[in-house]
Image (tube, rainbow, N blue to C red; front, side):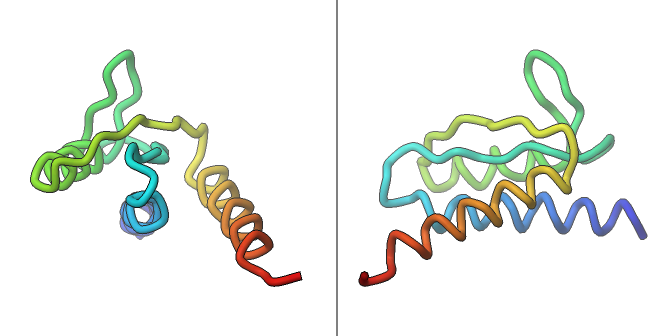
Amino acid sequence: MVRMFQLFAVILLIFWTCASALAQGKLRVGLAGQEPFVIKGPVPTGAAVDLWEKIAANNNWTFDYIPFETVEAALKAVSVLMSIRNLNDHEW
């Protein structure tokens, strides 16, 4: 059950990153999780990495991975970015 949550969190992070960054050209993709979803190394691999790279290739998207130590850290970063984005979208 924990692994399913982690996979869901990684996929959610990937798709949120896509939606928020497409207009900016190059995507920044958060990379977090455990094997078999994310296998850390000089060149990351794993089920989530394979899925993302196929999606990116099919859509001709360019991207950089942003590594996180834990899924929780990645989700916290997304939360902070969303807060900043909401502040920027607000009319003062």
